[in-house]
Image 1 (cartoon, rainbow, N blue to C red):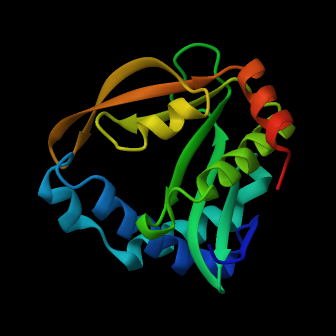
Image 2 (cartoon, helix red, strand yellow):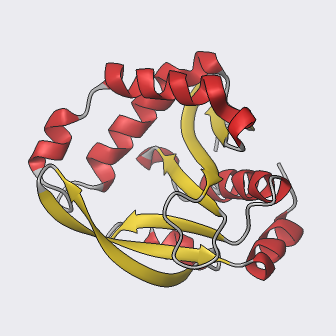
Length: 183
């Protein structure tokens, strides 16, 4: 494994984050989403969205972290206030994506701890993460103590897609942060 740096994202990272975002969607969700979703994926649009997110960032209790290997962003995670809580969740992990060739090296765990630590600092606990049913990352969330805690449907390209919620209460977050430390 190459030397790895975990750091907060900067505005100049928007294009690289967009590339990881689009590319990992294409690989992770193939067969789970309609082709029309993939047809609409666009690096330029995604970069513009990330520029906007990173420009407002921490002022709105949001954080984005990146993993850099050999000068290249290979993964990112983003979190902030819960957009669709099931119960009392105050925080949400919006995204965590690791390029396929960099998976299973502990990068996702380090990024997850970073955003959980930020959510804790913003007093945004418990935490929820919504994921498309069948996503191979479900076992990763479960290995981190995520408890499946709900389901709903979301419309994507005119198709209803089942998404499930994973939940981390304060005790589970405490254990992850205490056991692993902050990057």
